[in-house]
Image 1 (tube, rainbow, N blue to C red):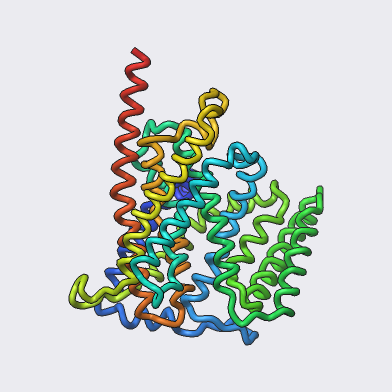
Image 2 (image 1 turned 90 degrees about the vertical axis):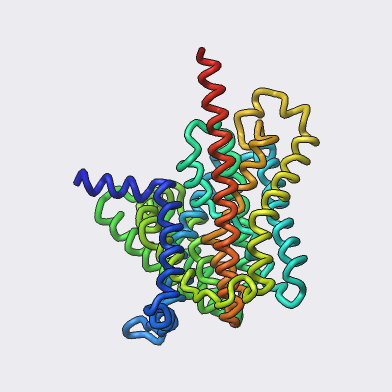
Length: 402
């Protein structure tokens, strides 16, 4: 039992999440370019049907559309917590990360469009996302002693960034819209909400409620997929409507599974790309647009957005009350550090890439390589800045102690 608890604790840690994602992506690239690569790629395209039904998806889509919905459920639970009881529970506290997040979405999209051109414009949402798990994991790895307000600001910014990404997925990547299925999905979510609101005392009634919630969640996911809206939106809706106490327990229970299996599996499957022969000359504008837009667009956009808010709200930011929240004290080098770390797209960017270039395997492969390259640059630059700012903070703390 002690060993099991230790493993669960490790799987919940932000450090493990960051390391496992990198390892899975690298492994995917290596395997794809080995003798086993073509066969494994074909396996991800193989159809897999639910026994006794006509519901059928490819193995890859079961990962990206099915399992990833659990990740988005956890994201939605964290999003609601931050909006109601966390660092975004008032307009004043949300102002700086909201403006920075908006600028951190607009600038990467603009950089992408300038480099890729109108022929590949549909890929503009790919570099706008920040991988919240990876970004916080990087800080946990190399940011010992980093001021707490930097992590708080990054968390708030990434949560807003995820909200924007969720809206983009729902609006831009709907296909074959089916009204009846959408009504069924809404009805399933409403029933899910109603069952979750039941306050039960006995153990067996709580067990029945859990079973009912699982069945309704599966129904909501199936109906959402059939409606033409990307199925991960079902996970978002369920995480937002479930009673907070139940939602947080469910997210806490699911997090080890998501970190240990689902996210690494998604990174592995998404990274099954055969590298083009001929080096950089064989890569097209989609690769270069994403690889540049993620690190450069995020650094310029978030830094500019944070600077503008600091200029406008400077009199209020001098108040000590504003230096403890998400909007206070993150300026200068600390703001640049946050913006560099936010350039790690990874999970959501890879999903955006799958959706944007679903009908073009060649462009999709370029997009995967662009996401990996841009995120790698952000990891190196952001990790170096985090380590530097953490060292400065530790030296300052020792000096104050003396």
